[in-house]
Length: 139
Image (cartoon, rainbow, N blue to C red; front, side, top):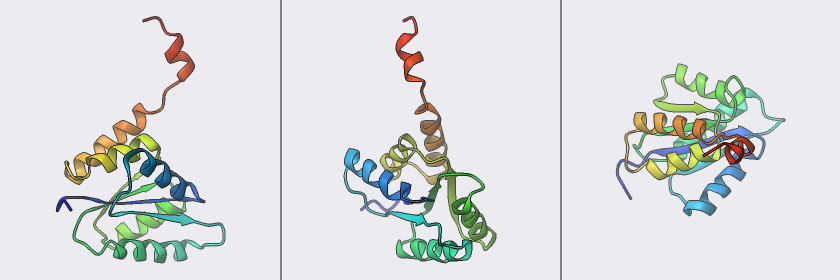
């Protein structure tokens, strides 16, 4: 395993995290150091923070960790903010989508985490395309 491989954790409202992980692994294959955390309606923010800490400790390595969440300001993003306030050394991006996740997973053995964050955000933005407009534009 590469020594500079970043850990990746996807944390979302509902089963989106589990589903996007399955989709990504369908495209690029099973991934090491890749976890998900599903925030369920019955969970409190405190319970989510505890679960997040457990997931981060489960990586059990010294690699940097990138947390991808669905919505800025939602409970998953708030849980990340609370860990940052406690001094956890993690990076995080909100607005996770499949282009972002694929970019991060594909580049995490090649690039330092700061670059990976920038590349992931670019891929997320470029992955949102009006298909009808794209196919009806003049060449």
